[in-house]
Amino acid sequence: MDNTRIRFVLVRTSHPGNIGAAARAIRTMGFERLNLVAPHRFPHADAVAMAAGALELLDDTVITPTLVDAVADCTLVLGCTARKRVVQLEELSPRDAAARALAASAHGEVAIVFGNERTGLENEELMSCHAAVHIPSVEDFPSLNLAQAVQLLAYELRVAMLEQIPAVAAEPREALASVDELEHLFSHLAQMLDDIDFHKGRSPVTIMKRLRRLFLRTGLEQREVRILRGIFDDAQRMSRLAKKTREA
Image (tube, rainbow, N blue to C red):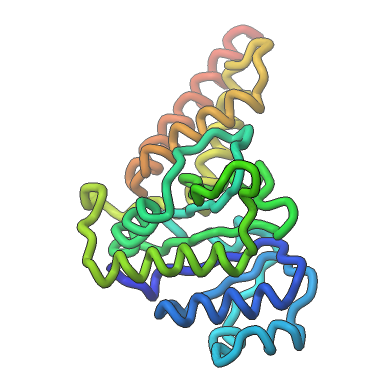
């Protein structure tokens, strides 16, 4: 278990004070990595004021334009969301998420992702996540302050580390595929399905959502991704040959 491989990612944060408060929350639990995706206002004096002693972490914050950029090298991405979404993902409690994250950090980079204060994570952003984390708050008032949610997840990760919770999944035989490698796989899969005329009136968007969910759930290894892309290449090659035969 390696806490240096765990990053906290804040997406489209509106209030710079929440960024500073989140940095402080992360630092108090022994973590050092904060990523921001398209923050509305940063750097900002309010962020500095709320960081209260975590300025070094704030100074080292990485800023990217999209979530995919922020997690491209990660092998596990957990998205925190307060409500049910169209994108159906495995749902974890904060405690289970902490155990999963620490187990995965032994083998690769891990991201815990939090959305905008008002809207949370968009469905498109959740599609880059392997599972969703749901804090079991009361139904009539489910929304936590962003920094509070970050503190809660950081606390669960800290407790899991101190208690040395055993890995919840078997150690992979090979290195897991990163988000970047999976995104290339999904693009290749979508193109292959078009090339072989798979859809035949069915919705390509719906099918790709289901296939993404399937592959994200399995935890593909890099070697498995290469095998699948080799299969896609052969399917495309056979489709081109069949098309030439029909046109001859």
